[in-house]
Every structure is written in structure tokens, then in C-alpha cells.
Amino acid sequence: MPRIEIAPSLLAADFSRLGEEVAAVEAAGADWLHLDVMDGHFVPNISFGPLVLRALRASTRLPFDVHLMIAPVDPFLAEFASAGADQILIHPEAGPHLHRSLQAIRGLGKRAGVVLNPATPLEAVAWVLDLVDTVLMMTVNPGFGGQAFLPSQLPRIAALRGMISASGRPIRLAVDGGVAPGTAGPAAEAGADTLIAGSAVFGTPDYAHAIAALRAEAGKAAHPNPVDLPDHSGGAGD
Image (tube, rainbow, N blue to C red; front, side):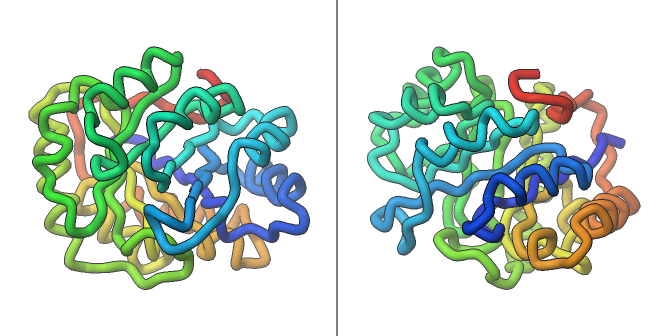
């Protein structure tokens, strides 16, 4: 079974002390740091930009998993890559040419990913699996933290797991939205191997316990996968 990776989402952290929060989740055993970039246009919220990434990059070895909820996305890829992103995730709806955008990310030397909203057809990623390292299934509608997990997405996670397995490529299947005790297990059982959690980590008094609990619950239910997956923990650029 693949190792379950946990990526705390910075959106749920205390913004008055981001450096301390990042150091705390790194010490607590996080594998990635997930950074939600929102533009108030593609999604109904505004979060932060490349200056925040750049400010945090020198203070942690955690890989930066940067989820760009901005449109158009192409003009900003190089800037986020330069600011310290290790993996850049984009939505099919955020530009006219998904294939070209993924090529651009890889051309910048970064891992590339595609994000599927709850109503985005799985076919949107079917023809670009050769270019992606991660597919992220949103289990809430993006734009706000603290939303409830949508159980309707579990069959889609399972179908996506089948697509990834058939590809034979070492692609991670991440889930974001309402991931918490009680939903981590079903998500992993459906096929997720990477869990992005905001308030389920940052909203608790003990980050290490929260991360370990999510990993344990998901590990017990994890879907068997014959493809060896990369371990993204251990430092930026690994």
C-alpha cells in the first residue's frame, strides 16, 4: 500500500504568525505544505500571492504544493515557480490550453498537477495524465476553508483511481475539502493517497497528533495500488 501523505493547508493557519505555523507543522510530521492561491475572480475569495511563498520558502524544507485558483493562470506560472513552488496545481477551467499549461509548468522544472472541481468531468484530465504528477480531487467547492466533505465525490475518487492505475504512471491522487477524522478513511478507501487538511490540523491544539491520526485512519483504509508512488517528503525539490 502507498504511504499516505498529509499536506496541511496554509489557508487555515494563523496568518499573524505564518512562519511559526509552517515550522510547527513541519515539526509535526507534515509531508507537504499546501498553499491555496485565490484571486477573487476564479473563486470567491482572495488569499495570498508569490510574495508570501517567497517569504516562507527559506524557513522550511517542506515541499510547497501550490494550488492556483486564478484565471488566467498562464501569466503567473513562472512567478510562482520562482517564488518557491515545488508543485503547481491548476484547474482545466483556468486557461484555454491545459496541455500547454502543464508543459509550461514542467518546463519550469516543477511537478505539475490538475485539480478537478466537484462538477468537472474526469475526462478533463484523461488526456493529460502523461504530464501530471498529481491529480487533486476537490471534495468541496473551492474558495473557502472549513466546508463539509461532499460524499458524492467518493465514486469519482474511485473512478479516478482506476484511470490512474490504468495509466501505469506514478501519479498521486490527492483530496482536498472537509478532510478530517471520519472522512480521511472513506477518501483513502476510495483511492486517495494524499490528504490535504486545513482546520483538521491547524484548528487543533496538537498538530502532530492531528497529522498522525489522519494518516493512521487513512492508512487502515488505503486502497491497494500496484504503482510505486514518489515520496514527496524530505525537502523542497526532492
